[in-house]
Image 1 (tube, helix red, strand yellow):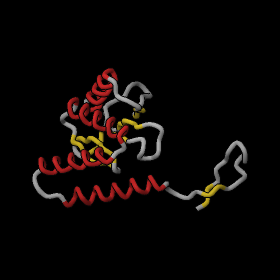
Image 2 (spheres, one colour):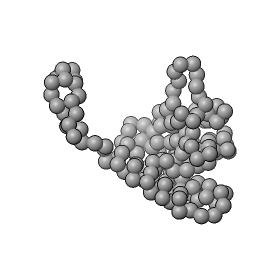
Image 3 (tube, one colour):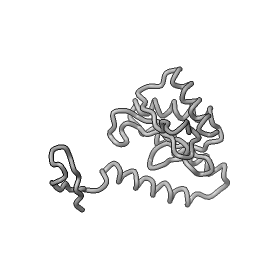
Image 4 (tube, rainbow, N blue to C red):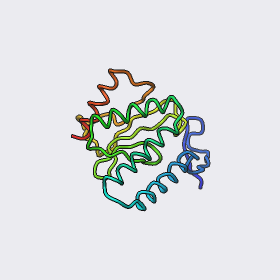
Length: 160
């Protein structure tokens, strides 16, 4: 597929080739499909399904490089304490926290898309609305005590 993309250099006259999704994006989509199949195949009570989903999240966190793993473990603990009503689940291969099956927030490791930093993101399900514009993702390089308090407050606000 070809896609014309104007740049400062070509003023829209050259045609650049669009090769589709990156390898990381394709991998995330495959992970999401596997997550959906795994969730659909699970039997048992709601509590058993939630416990299995949390085990999946903890296993995914354990696979992360150390710097991301430390952040993800802290985020997991903060979210569980601040909003016990949220259920951990995997979302495109990332630890996420949902209410009624809909993701409210998620942790994206820096390694996931080869980013410079990890992020804590919030979906449109989060009640973070503040006037006409507000942040929905936060860059993380470490989690200090002050950051823990801020993240806890954001998560509490997100669930309403």
